[in-house]
Length: 97
Image (cartoon, rainbow, N blue to C red; front, side, top):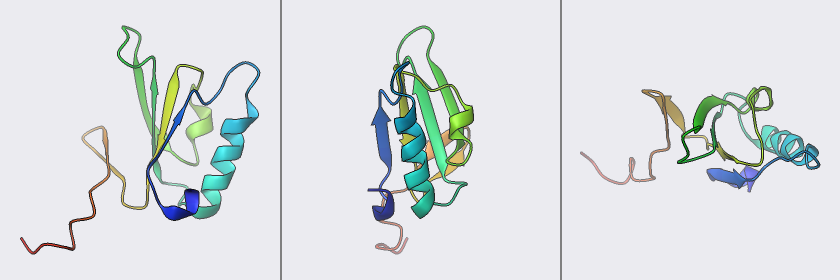
């Protein structure tokens, strides 16, 4: 998946007992993706204590990640705009506007 350049969502990525899997996932993605690839981390989505963190693939492990987190790893086209993570669809080269 990391080499296919898909945007990837990792649900429930870490717990008290499962701490290594997110590190291994980062290592795998860093083999195929730029360390500056945008990563979004949403914790406690839709709850009063929801947090949203934008970071990079290289720095994601320095952020708070737990059982209530969803980690979104961008692809080669993903960028940050107005504090949002954006991945354009594949139509930019298909149509002349």
